[in-house]
Image (tube, rainbow, N blue to C red; front, side):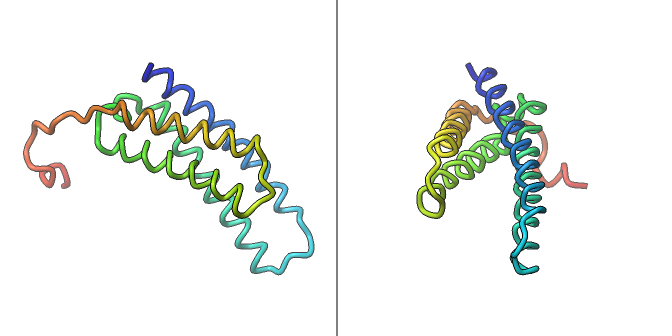
Length: 133
C-alpha cells in the first residue's frame, strides 16, 4: 500500500507540475498588469512549479527515505499541508473550482497517509554532527 501511495503521489505531482508549467506560460501572456504584480505572479508560479516537481522527484526516487526517515515524514507532512492549504485557498480566495479543490484534497490525503505510514529507523552511527563534514 505504501508503494502505491508513493507512486500515486509522484504521478499526481508530475501532473500538477505540468499544469503549473502551462499556468506560468499563460501568466506570461497576461496584459494590463503592473510590472510588479506581473513579476510577482511569474516568480510565485516558477517557484511553486519547482517545489511541485521537487516533491514529485523525491516521492518517486527516494521511496525508502520517504518511508523510513524523519526527513521523509517531514516532506510528507509539508506536502500534505501545502495541498490542504491550497484547498482552503480555493474557497477563500478563488472562485471555488471543485475539480482543483478535490484534486488538492486527494493529494493532501495521500501525503497524510504517507506520513502516517513512515516508520523512522533509529540512528545507529555516531552523533548526527559526525556526518556533517
